[in-house]
Image (tube, rainbow, N blue to C red; front, side, top):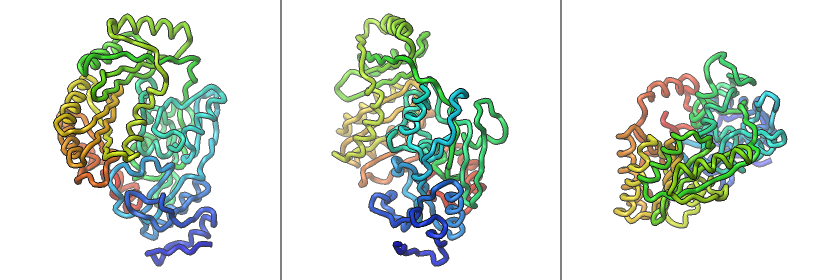
Length: 424
């Protein structure tokens, strides 16, 4: 048994609480934004997790909840990081009543393994998140991660129908249920989605599901410039097309590319393709491969490879502002000698990769955030070079900040969970 040093003399006996397999000394990969915790806890179930959280809260320890660890770099560095509370061993699909198109699943299940289990009954959780082989159910909910399928199926807040969370006092709180039409009680599932683990630690979730498509087909068309790309995006959205996903890719020196995904039967796909070609003519169009829908993840991967100083920002804007915003990004890149790649979804959400000197990246981010916020949009800085000048990842706080702080005070008065990482 390893001996774990602790700055807290009243710290609980973790081995007695979780067993030897539930406690370990941190390794280099457990660092959180430059801070090394002194303990990693890996409870075997939600009851153990709630008990561990209760004892950490009593001992005044700062707790960093962790699933697959794919987004621990997002947000502010934590003020303290005493303990990592991992959901790695909460990895079970609890119940899959496939006839009801719902699933109940523990928070540590990876998205890839969940999709594989659902596929047995030709069903899916209709999301396309970053790093599905590593990202967990609890992690994607906490970060509110979603991709191009959001256009057709909605965000995670639309797909989650029940949740259980462990509160810092050790209480396991549940809300929602196992059926889609459930309206009882406060909407805790939506509340904790996107809360960055500051209200409680998600231990299980219940989702509504969708059938897998019989067939799918992706088409890519070329636009002349950002203005033409926006015209095509809006034309496709306004048409009576049953597309599942729609995105635009902007790369310096290359014509903008519009990707459209159709799902259905072969006959239906052929009809949709014919209508699309007629709609966007004379713009060139071709069938393409599904990997184009990984364009967003490729930008995040490029930022993390650190081949050159890179920053990646998640942006939101009105769909009618795509040309203006992508044009501004291109102009900033030229003026500051940066490389810029942007992927925009038809919903108005997107991500931008900026590569170049850190001080020039900083200037571009400041200018872009000012423009977006002036137009009711936003910019969230996800990953960035270590030597980037100080830049708040979250931007101007929303008008609901006082309400968010009141909720945090109610759920976690001692600020045990993720202190300093989020807005509150």
